[in-house]
Length: 292
Image (cartoon, rainbow, N blue to C red; front, side, top):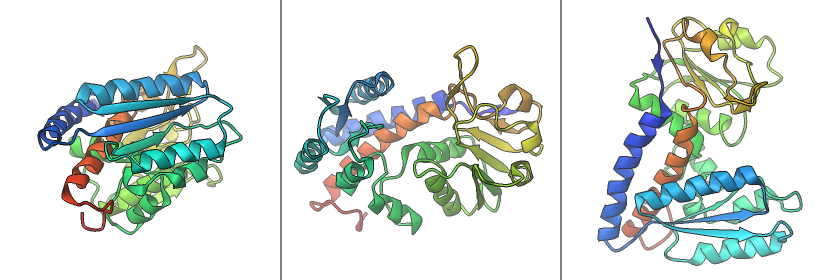
């Protein structure tokens, strides 16, 4: 039997259609969702990604502001701009595109963004809320993976879920989200001994380490669901993931392709987070998720 291909483009299109309707409803109530993105320097990959976010946000009907700053912008200057946007009432979400120039401390910038406008879901307040099951803005990539698994009806209750990768952006928040669905979660990483013995226990295997070809048929049990978060380049320069995709097609029950799997979901969940932040502003005059 052929596996289910977990198509992020299909899921993303479905979610964006719903988000567009939600945006229209907010506009009718007198508030257009607003997203501000700060881009520091001339990293071409970052610029391309920001342009994708701009196009997606405007297509849904958002107000979008791009703040472009030169490479030599100081940390103090950047923090001042972030604070200014924290106070702007027409901006619901703030995103400072990473990576930043080496002279700027990324964590200080992340912590400077108001937690209620932190649409990346990176602020320690939102990370803490996720860890104890309180409402808050969630990290976009793992949140998108959860939406994809839900769309395809993947049952997580009581299942063994193994995450390969322990980053603050994917691995750790992914574990928290899976726990909320009553999965039994294991986090493996670069220093895990006998990795294949760990991953073969997985009913749901998520690889997010950025190592081409890391996950082979020797790492996966028959019938597993495999989610590939890796973004790598092969010898021909083509985009590929952590998983040997073709090798696993005859083994797994469901799998994400690269490209076209997890990737499209990340920007969609950024838009979703902005809508959530905007909607909350209509429910309370204070910027707090405690009453949500």
